[in-house]
Length: 410
Image 1 (tube, one colour):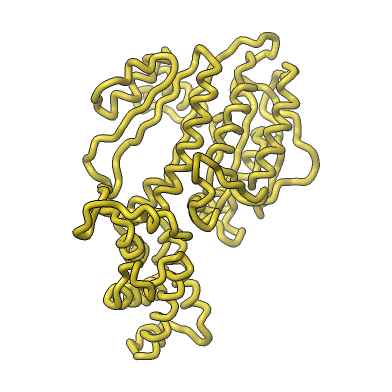
Image 2 (cartoon, rainbow, N blue to C red):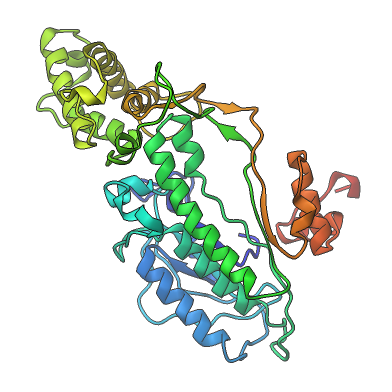
């Protein structure tokens, strides 16, 4: 936390100190309390995000922005719960208002898992979310834009000079789903990104000083339309799935853990009983995602189930089964492959590929992004357009976090 105005997404477990159950830290640092003391307004679900942003707008919208040093924002306890009371007034330093939103212990949940399917995205719609859920990508974008618009007031609050901002919006779970070759989960994340992109374009179209660039740093999975000796894609099968491969994998292992008297000795026994019990668990987990192996349209065979059973037992023994990695967690990747067979979507890898990725640009300077370019040139073009000195920017960042450059003799 080095003065970034807006930071929203998942990862709250990395802010809890090690005494909190589920913390991803190995020390006693309470970064939520630290953020509150640094003036950050803290939100832990969609409802809190809206409330924090409304509070910032109410304070900053009339230009009554005070000057001074950092002061406490909406604090939080080590458990991750925000303190009671109203939103504290932010202090408008050179960095402006600050917003920290952390909506999941680790990665944000897949859209398909939040909504139990993809039906809510039909015809350009966006399915609603419960106020206690994580906000959508579009809601997070909206919160960031409103907060950064406040930050565009001058550091003294005396004028309304526009300083501008740089905002990075990532739909990172597209990549995660593609690593698992999970076509339905990819589609849900693409829909969410599409809605956020539309909102970004709407924002830019109302101004004459804004550029929106949408791209990717790489392709993942090597997706193809058509596979398995079928020249085409089965859209109904793609869209009827109601759960991600990650959700199915987690459900399988959780069900194994919940078996009465289960232990490693029993799982390692290779008995017919173990195979039968885990086969039932795997079958029901797939059926709960609307990919029932007992339905011939799923194209999931008995040998597929046998493979998944073996991997499920290993996953239960090792604890590695659901969370995204690149080529790891064999159960997750195998479920993605088996659930995908009926869709007609093909994949070449569980890793990144060398395929060119598209670049879309809208607004001031958009014409500079036409044609094929090295991916490293995209960042350089944006630096040129906003007319900043990268070396000076590095020095400011270094100073904020207290680093010394070896070239300075420090």
